[in-house]
Each structure stands twice: as structure tokens, then as C-alpha cells.
Image (cartoon, rainbow, N blue to C red; front, side):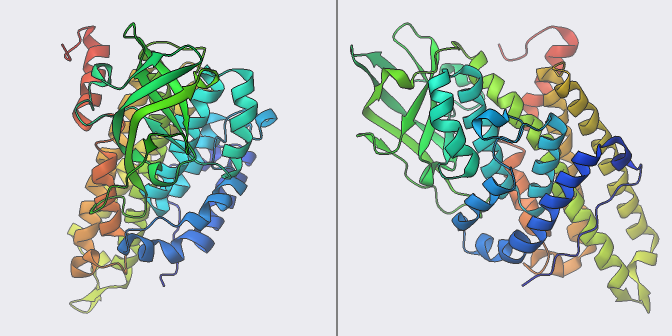
Length: 392
């Protein structure tokens, strides 16, 4: 069982930009990760199993919907606190952060933002504690980067809606109690529906044989003439801006989270380089190793400042989709590069479960694709710069 000796890199004293409350939240989540998650994560990843016993623990530390109002049982924290929590969770494992960010940004957020007061009161308190878990149904087998082309649809049957279709690559699906599902109505408008486990015709087959996010549960959502009560329709949103608004919140969390994975790879590489002796001295004394470590820390520092500034803009409700997109893309790119360089510093040991490097590297190959692929985010920035969409 690996002992977690992680030390947080902060070359530019970014901690001084955080409030005392931010640092307290960060330290609390970090201690939880070191005590409860780090000792077990390699074993669960090797077995391709999600540690379901941690769900109430994640609720207890405020990882589910931390920035939503306290009146619904949520954390009532600001956006920087949310980012910090995601960073600390993904420093352990991207799959753990995925579970939390799906719950908070893709399930709880749309219920709060687009739902009725009755829906908020019914679902949010139990989702906040982890008593209930949720998932987000947008991506389909034939519609990933083009969600507007979705074919999942529902019909008005008088006293209920009849839902048909399928979604795939859905985090939390195998054990979710509810699903926030985006589907087209009879007029072709995209609407959100809350589908509950146990509704006849609703199944969630699990996705197996993954090389990535192995400690996260992934599955499909299949709807075969599912009768959805009319009170389960999200009343306050119509169109693609609904799910895209949720993705903005989730991508913001990923920007912080992927940086956490980068930090863990850097810290592991630094510690290993100081301890590994070759040619009668630590490999950290060699120029090429120092070059790698210096470049890693430089990119992490730039990422820290980018995420902090984005958090300030989020708190002021001024962060744009394009700004969030740029940060998500940047953090994942540098995390992947740092993971690969860190693997080389670890040599052959870097491919073993004794160190977290290969697990992070495999996880990040999913993070670079989901919630907007690497290239799609580049085109979002390009559209923001030129005013011209490259999607059509």
C-alpha cells in the first residue's frame, strides 16, 4: 500500500492569492485524500472497480455541489473553493474527480439552475450527501462533438412523457439513482428530463474493458418507452444552451482537476529523482532531469495562475465559455505532457502501480476527450478570436 508523501508545488506563492477559507478547504480535502483515497486507489484501478463506499465520504467533505446554496444542503462555497476541491481529488485520480464533478456540475447544477423549486427540494439535499447519485445523459453513440444532432426523444402522452433513445460514455451510470437526460421534444427542441432508476424501460449497462478511468464507473443509458412524469421536466430551460451551460461548470472543474494530476506526476518525479542513484549520485543532479522538472513546474505555475484568474472571473459571473474552454484544454495538455515526462524520469518503475504516473497518463487520455475534445476546444477559441465558426 503506497504512502502518500505528496507536497504541493507553489513556486509563485499562489497560496497568497487564496483566502484563509480556501486554504482550510484545500488542506481538509488533501488530508482526506491522503488518509482514505491514496492507500486504496491503485488497487481499485487495477481491479477496474469504483470504490462505492467513498460516496458518503465525498458528500461529507462537501465535494458534491460545493458552490450551490446551503439552503439545499450544499456547501455555499465560491467557485475557487470548488476548483480547489476538484484539484485535490484529481491529484489522487481523475475518475474520483469525475464522479464528484458529474454529481455537482452536471446533475445538481442543472436541477438548481433550470429546475423547479419542488425539484430542488426533492433532489439536491440527498445528492449533496451522496445518499443519491446522479449522471448526465448527453453524448450518444452517433453524436459526441455534435450534441445538437441527438436522436433521443420524448412524446407528450397526456399525463406523462414517453422517452426513447440511448446515451453512452456516461460516468456514474451503473449506480446512479437519477439521470439528467437531454432529449428532443416533438417540436425538435432540446429539453432536460429527470429520469429515476426503477422506471420501467430504463437500463444502465456498464462499460467494461477500459484502459482509462478504471476506478470510475462508466455505462450507457437506454430508454425503451420510459414513462417519465411531467413534473420531472426541467421547466426553466429549452435548447442546447441548457446542457452547454452545465458543461461550462464541469469544464471549469476539469481545468483545476487536471492540474492536480499534473502536480502529482511532477511531485512523484521530483521525489524519485532525488532518491534514485545512478553513476554514484542522484539522477536529479543531471542536467536533462533538471530540465524536465523545471519545465514541468513552469507549466504547472502558469496553469495555477490561469485557473485562479478564471476562478475570480467565475465568482464575478464574468467567465466566458471560451475562457473556460481554453483553461480546460491547457490544463489537460500540460498534464499529459508532464505525465509522459514523469514516466521517463521514473524509468521502468514508471509503468508499475508502485507509482501513480501510468494511471494518471491513462486517465488523462479520457479527460482530453470528454466534455469537449482537445481539438474542439481549440476551435472554440478560434471562433472566439475570429467570430467565424469552424463547425459548419
